[in-house]
Length: 308
Figure 1 (cartoon, rainbow, N blue to C red):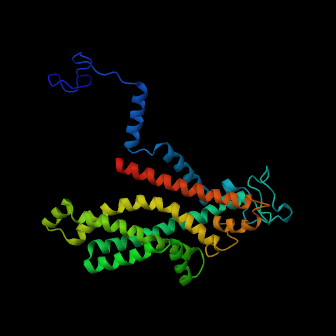
Figure 2: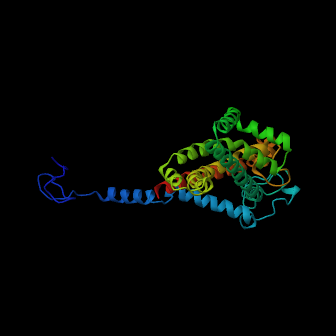
Figure 3: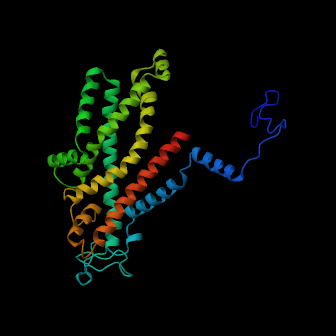
């Protein structure tokens, strides 16, 4: 039968179409697709991940050096140029005070990206601590942490963030803490499962038999097994944190004016949706593009890391 390996032939040879030892012909297109698939499985980001990485790199440049992309000053007021539509002089148009929206969108990248990164670090760090305590502690500690995370999961993330801001007060730093603490239960649940799995692994059992100290076992075997997945998930969480931080600014409890911030710019454009829709369109697109790019890049990094 075609394609069946003949046991009497050397390894790798086959009997195809009745001709012993012949090798199957390979479609060149399938061969190229196979090589691309092997390269992707070998650790590359793939086309979507590469595009996402470029978008994130542009966002980082905009956050660090906004003058390179924004042109005019984001706080410069020109009353005679108020509410100009997108054109040659102002590619994204102007707002009600004559400020250039392109410059404000570029400058707003810093606040949105900073809040997203810091909030993810706060949430991931808090989640790692809670997850390690639950995974390594006794039944009482595990039960307490489990109940806390379950209650937090039962509440909407935005509601948890608003409760934190109600205690700490509005502002960019409270917004970072609010989004971070609101996302911490998700990281805690992931870390708890990874730690419990690592505890029962043969590597840890061997280290115990060799007389290693508990601290050395945790630092050398348990934590490394739990941290890389958290880093990959945290990369995905930056996009979510950017969205939630913009939502808090939209509600007026995030970054205060006149600092450019995408959520606050969306809120400012609500009054002019019919007469100047570009005031809300471009900040909204910036939120969607950055959150999508970070999410796609995080998934690509997770797949590339798993393929190594």
